[in-house]
Length: 509
Image 1 (cartoon, helix red, strand yellow):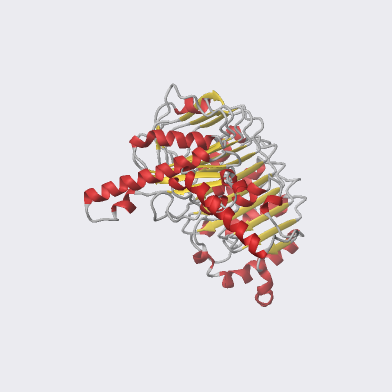
Image 2 (cartoon, rainbow, N blue to C red; image 1 turned 90 degrees about the horizontal axis):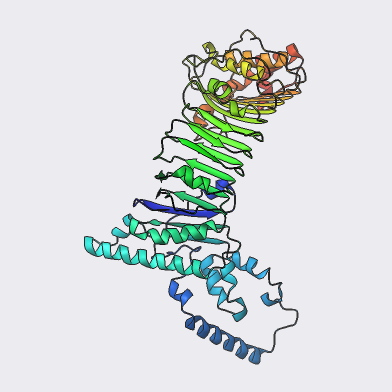
């Protein structure tokens, strides 16, 4: 890989979860690894073997004198040397890396324990931070180069001495330029030995002679400028199981003609591209978030889960009509905008999603009059093409509040498998009532309908408290509707939060 720009660099390899793999740590303020407790000491303390030997000898002599003065330790006292050899590195890895290195010089037998530390995290100097150290421009540049050189030397020293075994996280965050490409290549090589690589805010330029990362299992690219033969690079990642491409640019299409036979998870988000096309026979989970484009997934007979978020008001319709590759999924997660101008779902024959069992829909309804907008009733058509659906979670956010209303029940085919339905953001708007009545009437084995007026923070990004300020006024009416409708359809309807408003609901009734 060739570094072609000079933005801040974030290199991270990690063998844990994706959410943890995107954590951001605060920048340190000292040269090299700074004051960050997870950073190693300066390279002089790691490379100079004479100093640790002298300190170890002095420490051993001191322990001998203490034993002579106070007697040998009790036979029942705990010593780390008494533990199994495989346990000692685990205990040492619980310390911050800097402290683990310091602790390793206490005993000769502990000398190499730090080299099995699982977390190697380095937060280095950035140009903005370093240039602020002095008012003199040229002196500031010299200071920046010296501190960056010290930092690079520290990272190189640590990875040269580390065993490379049991790495959980290896991350390097610093400002880099093109002339440091050799160091970047060295760090990437060390990272890929852990089978997981996360690159952010860099430019990469794969070339024709690159051998690829044959042992790489997970690759995450976030805000990366991609130049050169990117499909060729992926083709040489023969063991890739997890691929995430987020907010990257430099490519017009993600068309990978080579087979990625071991790829199980594919995430594409925030990309300005014209088409997606992959060959992945083992793909189990596909995620796409972006504008409406053609998506073709070849040979995905094992696909079980899909997460789709198309931009624009045609999102819901496109999910069910424009991505035939997801028809075999068992779990479908949708995010969409709904308005009265939304594209309506065309009439399709029943049985398109024959394997679909669980569906979650997150809908934002944009309308000046939620009671007059029936765009949400498109979901009735969605349920028609999923005859074996068992659970439905529907989360709604309507931009404009309104009074309560009743409405006519829309038509929907009979469902013989739908057992559980949950609706949040349920405010008794006309379309919401119509959809709920559709389900209650046609879901023959429905065990419970759960409704919640509150719009939850877990569903929508950001603070939703402004949408939940009127719950005290809304909840009694929702409870009243639930009681009347439950009696009408002879189905259990539970209202989340109703216990605090039971008296008010009874009085309102």
